[in-house]
Image (cartoon, rainbow, N blue to C red; front, top):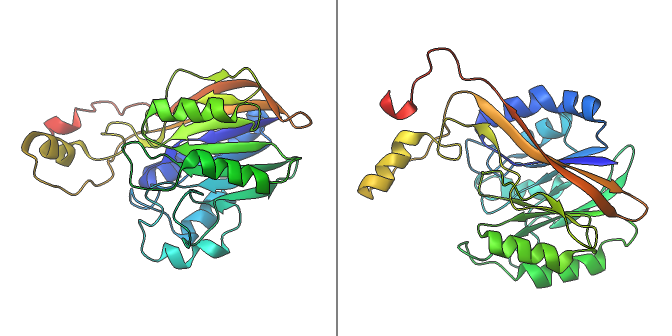
Length: 269
């Protein structure tokens, strides 16, 4: 079976390219399910219940989040009703929502576990101990797909080896830059340091370049709006055996829209 995991969706452009391509990808690649990180889908920060429903209607079977989970103020009151949507399981106790879920897709049953890193990130509980606790609670007969929303590649690869053989896949999100280290670890866990980004690519990881440049060159804070322009959809397809829960392959995927004719450097505009 094959499951596609899609990297951070950024803004309206990211949502659009997801809707335009995921139904086709499901057919052409013979996908059993789709997992998408959508923590930046609402104007670049957070998600709403209405947008989550749009993703499910467009072909997502599960949604993961990250450090911008609460970017939309109304979402904390909505998250509990959203089935198959998870926020990092190592958020502090008392945070609304679930950190893992079991998805009953039409052709397979699997679990999704969301974790957040601690290196160069806001304080959260230990992702390693949280993973141990979650795996004790998740049914033993289902393959487990982990979205590790983290900054440091060292933390990501260490967690992957720590979970090797206990989960089917560990895929990183958060940096918005797809990595080239797709591999199946010795005990059958598929790994990729970062799935990449689904959103406007003539940008600074999805944001308008001009205010980002201003912040870097002057130190003066600026509002980082989502960039305009052509988009990319990035992720990885994990092939696995549901009976053994072991992965046999992981392949990166990228769909990049062409730049319009006459397109110029956004900073020069």
